Length: 178
Image (cartoon, rainbow, N blue to C red):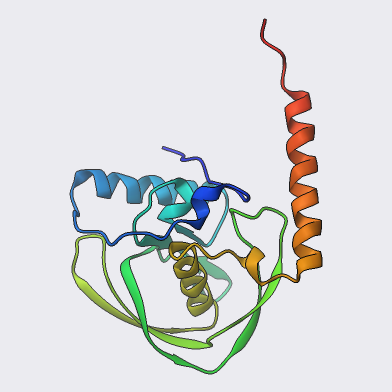
């Protein structure tokens, strides 16, 4: 089932998420729905908070490059924690919750992440480049941080005006029910 992705300036995106403790049927369904939503958007990663679930987990798929084919590589990280960082990389990041916004972000080039998988088993990932950037981006979401926050005040104001204008235009197009 496709889920609604919360968009800036929705205040719910500023919540701090709680750890997952229950890996039951409801949680498994949420993961499946989040993958379906992420692929349909399309996006590379989706934190639970972005679909109104205020818990610490994310789904992502940056793919595996096999020659000229990119093969799917879906990952679930539950209660992720970055335990080490190396180097720095600047990446042009977009966000499903901040449409039409691309921000150059400085991130750690390589990270080690401890988390649980969708069944609650411990997993340790050492990743770099795009996968590392994606994980850091989604963990920021779990802490109520958006790429919008790294913009200068002027660029924040311009983006706010754009979002407000688009919201007013979409409201004006809605038919009136009488």
